Length: 137
Image (tube, rainbow, N blue to C red; front, top):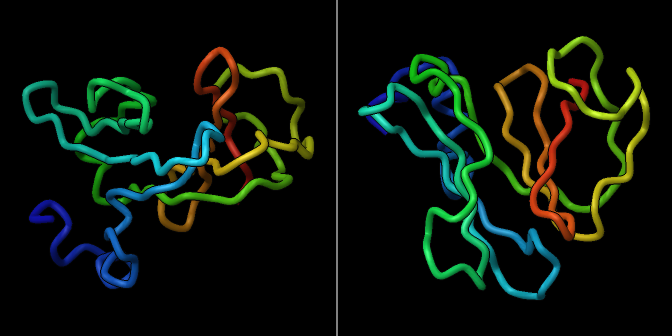
């Protein structure tokens, strides 16, 4: 939390049970609680989003995203329930969704890696593992 103390979004972080640095949900639909964590990796100079599924033997089994360490002060993670989301245009990420498409994402909890007051990247589980798409603000 020392990286975040006094930042513009600090009060919003304090309102979340895990300060938007971690969250739980059933990301793979097996009925068990899974955990997502946003970690600082100083040796690599990045912050990384990891998910540990209840069935995983190792806690770092799924590294979903990395961002430069300087950006961690604006990042957060939160579980989102199943539903329809509108994809964002021109985010520089290749996925098969057209600009502004409404996408039904998964059959269970999804995970949102967001920048406060900006777009979010949503991750969901498929039989082949986690996939993602950028969502509109």
